[in-house]
Image (cartoon, rainbow, N blue to C red; front, side, top):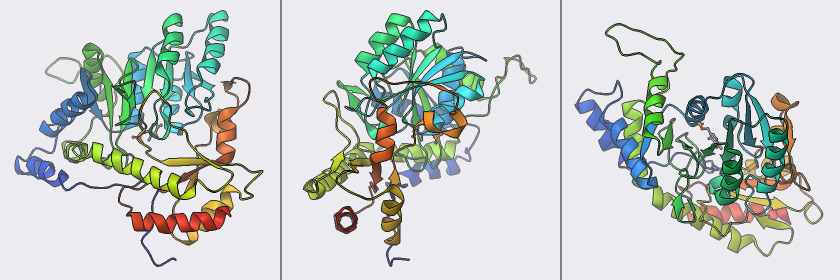
Length: 379
Ligand SMILES: *Cc1c(COP(=O)(O)O)cnc(C)c1O
């Protein structure tokens, strides 16, 4: 192995503020159930993104699952979802026994194409089978184009779940990412821009619905002195210790966003003379966090396949990955309906797209070494 610590796409980066919140929980001997760190983490996130409430959960996946439950998604319902994303965006649709329909990306933002969405809504409306929800994903730190998407969803009366797992800290027309739909979700998984080692959050302006989320997330326990249950519940809440990590991380979120954007700028500056590569564009309507720097390689100009690229960098202990394999191409979803406009953009991005190390612990010096290896393989 190359004589250097591994350089990751994105890995946990502690701020130093976490320990005081964790210690506080230990000093009060209150690591569970729930507790002050959980309450504060929820209100601090809600305040950061300017929404009315938040519920801290064990994962982003749990947050998507609860959002679907709160929107009444049941067996045999339809739910639309972006195709170019991590599988966690869509798995909760299956948890509910509902049927996903995947929507393609637009080239401008790599996120859900309003034109493809419109076609799908039209067709499903004609069949009298409108989706119960549309899960819109913000890819690699960039917001989707919500004004266009919302116009369509409002017209057909379909609520939006904003999967902002990768875009905490980004903006859309001045609003914070995560606040554009009926529900927003964040992830604090180890690879996200801030982490609790594992965790998630459901946010909304609908306080009543969030109360309901708390109920479902704690085994749906009815009001009674004994254990009484009339609905199906889950064990989805976040630990008070992990919420303490989240509070310490939240204090450096803006600094992490700046660093991620700086990492992107250095890649762009140092590689833009290479013909045949293009970086994921930043849409004009907002600021992306550049959670991961992603780029495409034109196969006509650069003859290097994904396996060679990833394998070459791996020799130098550098992690890289192809962009998400679209869900409509996953074996799990092989019979699933899929909508695109003109051409299959997400499939093309998958075949040409790569994610570069975007770890905020990476020094400029280390990044320049990564860039040296990139130039070698891209030549
Ligand atoms: C990470 C991620 C999730 C899932 O979050 P977990 O906290 O890992 O459950 C969902 N959607 C997207 C787009 C993600 O990147």
